[in-house]
Length: 604
Image 1 (cartoon, rainbow, N blue to C red):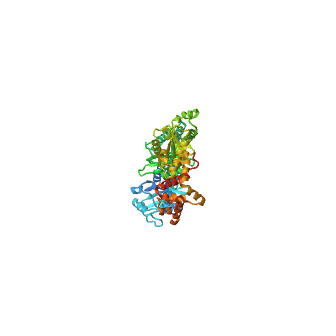
Image 2: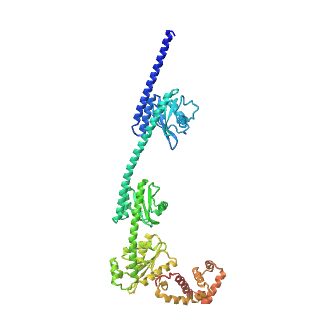
């Protein structure tokens, strides 16, 4: 080897040594930078802050033109751009990268292999699945060479860190290894940041829950205190408005508005009117049910229940949908109202029993009353010796107990005594005009009950030995009215004197003599022959003596009807249809029919 060759060899060796030293120094700087970056990423912070820090350090570390990080949006399996450094295009910085299936582009290959992947020219690479929108974004940004490495959480790839250049070139193995190592550190930092953020949010939620529970507990305590101090539904409504806002309406079991913080009266917006479906849902589940009206206002309803018994409803009307706590507070209020209603009902029922017992004793005791009965009545501020009228109320559509509940309120207004006697709602009172009193009480109960009812009043004679007979007159009078089709009326027994023989037990002999003298022959024939001549006669009169209508009503042939009428004429005389004979005969048939329809259990 001559001197020239020796010098050349020495020069090559020196150059190789220098290049190796440079690569070693660069590698040391990269590793030093990597560790320094990893340490800086260990500081806990918000997720977005950590993401920006990851991309910024990766950009500085790799020295590429652009660096960005995308995270999978799990519900949609799409990648969303979360941080970028070196971008020139505003469209790229604001883009979601990409809104395409997971098998698209470099990302698809990284997810498939769970390893780094790069291309020297992304747009011209035909081995990848391309998305037109993403390709357009890449072209606008000028990206050519692209390297992607996975961010892993165990076996799951939850994001991808990219390094890109605007020239076509390969990525060396050292670059791939460096960005991959950095991505591993970044993944841990990002997961820690997520856990930190979730922990902070959980703490905030816990603090809010504590405050909410504390406030809810205070409201519940206040609601319970209302019951313990003898408060009513009005106080509960005011507490709910203070705690929840809006306006509160409380309805009774008849859907009658008994309390409203908006000063609404009557049945306006009652559950039975506008909230029927949600009321049914709440009655079935016992929970708060929310609906809205055409004004955008929300109505939150809870049925007040005691077992299977419906006691009413509480409605919170508000411009906002209630949260879980507000709904539970409303449900607690409904429970408190249920307990309050049960307590009030128990007191009312006990009072009703006492009043009913007193009423029965006043009706059945001989007059004048003994001092013990008078004293018991006076203890309730009742002057039983002054009563001059007895009312009986008939309302088949309501339970007597429900009717009595409202009747007691009316009785208090009249200083009267009300209760159940022999199953009939009854009231004793003092009135200068008993007909006017009956009409007034009928209107009052009609408005409260919203159902047809009969009110029959009878005067109490000052010389009456007891009130048994007035009660019998009034109770039988209501039965007669119902039998003749009257359902909604107030009347007096003095207006029904034509039927006095029927409802007055003291006129029983007169009734029997009248019926025997008028219908005796027909009644005897029906009993012996098992026929229906009296019923035929009743149908004949009911159909205004029209043969065609009568035969249809009796479901018999015209010839059969004519034969029956001929038999009637043979028994009571051919002149039975003459006006002077037909009127008492028609009255007798009516009285006989009504008498058979009377309840044999009435007191006589």
